[in-house]
Structures are given as C-alpha cells and as structure tokens.
Length: 428
Image (tube, rainbow, N blue to C red):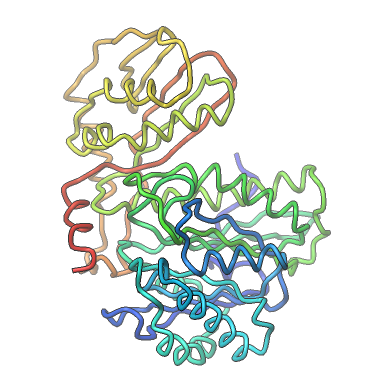
C-alpha cells in the first residue's frame, strides 16, 4: 500500500504551474512541436542527463545552468530537431532560444532550462521557434499539461503523463510528470525527455539526490534497443507552493516525497518501454537474491536488454535458456545452482535445474500480454496521433540468483520486425 494516490493534471497538477504546447512549424508534419512548462515562482531545479560524450547543446546548456544556479522558472522543449552535433552554431541557437523566452516572459534568461528532440545533426529552426514563443506563452494554462505532452513526442505512439498526491504536514503535496521516448532507449540514460513538477519545499541538495536515485530506479532501468541518445534529460522543479514546511534533511517526510517522486518516474519509464518502437508488449524483469540492489538491477537490465530474449518474447517462445544466458553474462557473480526462473506463473527453473512446464500455455501467456498491450483507440491513424491508448499488461520475468537481500527491476519491450522498418526509414 502506498502513501499517495493518482490524480489528474500531469505537470500542472502541482500548485503554481502552467503549461502549453503548440505547432510552431518545427516538424514537417505540422503537428505540435514546441512545449513550455512555467512555474509562477522560482523553483528548486535538479537534473539527470545523458552520459554520452556527444551531447546536444541543450544538455550542455542545462548542465552549466544547474551548476551555476540550482533553480529555474521555465522549461522550453522543441521537437523536430535534436540540435546535437551542430557545433558552435547549435550552442548559439540554444542561447538565443533561452534569451528570447526570457524576454517574452520578462524573467532572467538564466531561469530558463532547455530540451530538444528530433534528428541528430539538425539545428533548431530558430526563426520558427522565436516566432512561436509569443504564441506559446499566450497558450499557457493551468490545464495545459496534455498539450505540452503532445508537443514533445517524435516517434511515440502515445503521450506519457502522471500525477500523484500525498499529504505532508497535514497539507496536500503533488508531483506531476510528462515524458517522451520510444526508440534509442537504453540505460544511462535512455533516449528520452522527462519533465517533473512538484509543489513541495525541499533543499536543492536533497532534491537532486532524490532525483538521481529515482532516475536509477526508473529511467536508468529501461531499455528498448541498446542505444543511448545525445539528448536525454530528466528535469525536475520544486516550487514550494504547497506551503508545507521545507524538507531539508532525511527523515520520514523526505522518504515519502522521494517515494512519490520515484513512483512518478517509474510510471513514465514503464510507459516509454511499453511504447518502444515496433513493440507489442512491455517486459518487466524482477531480480532478487543478489548481494545488493545495484547487482540485482544490473542482471535485470541485461535480461531486459537481450536481443535474444526480446526476440523470443515477440515470437511468443518461452525460451528460458536465453534468460539464463543473459543473467549469466551480466557481470554479476552468482552460483548457478541457486538460479530460479519464472515466466508469469510458469516456473521454468529452480535450484539451477530445468523443470517441466506447459510450453503451449506459457506461449499463450506471452500472446495474452501482447494482445492486451495492443488495445488501441480506434481513432488513431498514425504514430503521432496522441489519442492512442495502450494497456499496461507486462510480461513478468522473475529471476532469483541467491539468498542475498538485493532486489531490483528493469523494464523493456519485445523486438519486432517493425522496429527495423521504423528506424530504417527514420530520416527518409
């Protein structure tokens, strides 16, 4: 049982936030491609970013801003051009974006954080972006989260959004989030953008620590295709508008807030994995019995990222040998005689020994999970139609490797023929 409940509103559910999303002419499709999240007051800001040495200009910009100033008012995100590997001109485009938004909002440009998504090597269409900013600001609304979520997608089939509420100091506290991601997804971080808002008051150091741990247990534990991007970012704002006492040190209130933050990030991370390019189902790998949490997560991520495991699940083939092989190559030592593998309710191996099981029934379990994931809204006509909905019905792979106290999870998706088609034709 959790200490929070799900509510509506996404990033505008917490007090003191507005959001908007519009078509600004950045995408050739004419679909929404420019999003803004604005806090009424200066908010504590934290971030987690790609580990790639080839970083987009927005990543370098945000890392510099957060090192100099642990707060922000606005997050501006463009879709269509990644503005990565674009050299000095790409950096100047990022600065110009921040300065233009700061001017229109009448706030310091240093209080603006940036994100971009799209084709690597393409600069932002800066003239279109600048022309769109006044229109974007005019659309800001305390119900604008869905519009913002729709404006940050690229190959996504669905928008990703969540909001949760708990009570701290007898007052409601809310955290909301939106995300995008579908392909080029792999831990550290995955190819994704996520923006989180919170109305609690929390110290900058504690907020960043909470966010980093939440990222490890969510966005750094998903995989679609083994590729890490140039633009990955998770940005979180906390503006204190709930009027609760400031959380400045570890304790019960900090644990509750971090738990809710982690739950928001995990929901969004699973939504990304479930929406993997060409995927038909979500996979959840649960590992227990490891020496510590990091070891368990490493095994789980290796299994979830195995192309052989993912292909078998797409083929509805309960080939547990591929699961065992992936666990064994994860770089985490364990005794083979302790290995236990379960697929849904089907026990496949125990104490390192294979067990008889109903292969047809296990295959039907995999098919049922895929059929559930493919329940789509009949109004959807293409990958950018944000009305498409999917059912969260994961394939569960449970692995035990010993008697340790370490446990961890990772999420991924199956690997289908469509993944190759989508990515083979990405820029053509």
